[in-house]
Image 1 (cartoon, helix red, strand yellow):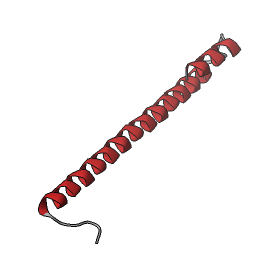
Image 2 (cartoon, rainbow, N blue to C red):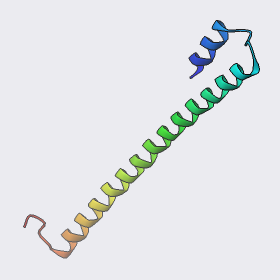
Image 3 (cartoon, rainbow, N blue to C red):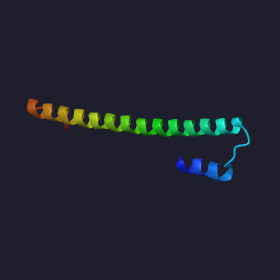
Image 4 (tube, helix red, strand yellow):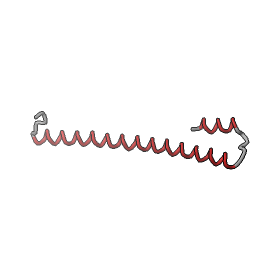
Length: 72
């Protein structure tokens, strides 16, 4: 993401017009939003998987305490 900004600055240190600059900023913001959304999705998915693992362990513990054999 930072590299994109560096490339833009080095390739066109003097934007030809405000539209070019606006387009660049919009593109950069979209990339940031996409990366943030991807990271957010990964965090949520990991939390869900951890909760499922915990739930499975709790169910197994309850079955053991109840004397239920889960190998049926």
